[in-house]
Image (cartoon, rainbow, N blue to C red; front, top):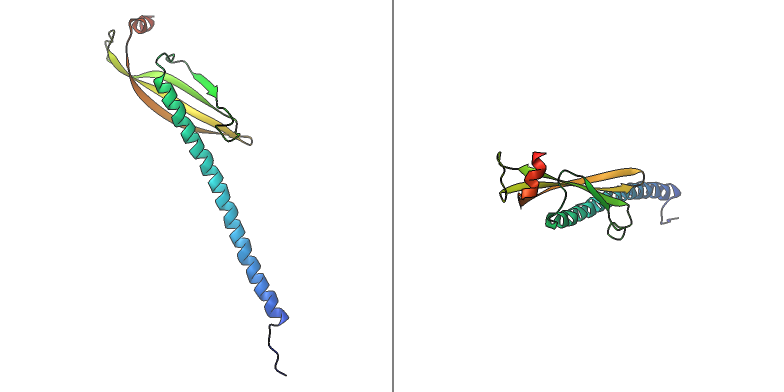
Length: 142
């Protein structure tokens, strides 16, 4: 008698090989999804940081050497709790400052967000030209 087909042992071995291959693929897929979520968070933080830096660079009357902070709207952060902290400081100035003299200011900005119990941060520095006003010099003399 000549029968065609697979034996039970061959079917079991083929099923085991397939199960191992599928388990490996699912493991790498899970890892890829975690990396994509992490990169999405970082990209969103970089965009929020750039947006807030642009806003801060345009505000002429920021207080110098005083930390300022705020929260982002959850609609901008994909539902994550997030905020920012910034500080404006003189960066480059002449030794003998005079009124209406130009100098360089630095804005240090940190964007933070929470994922679970962990707080993650993204930092950026921005620079702008500014003029020394007479009231700035009065504040330096104190």
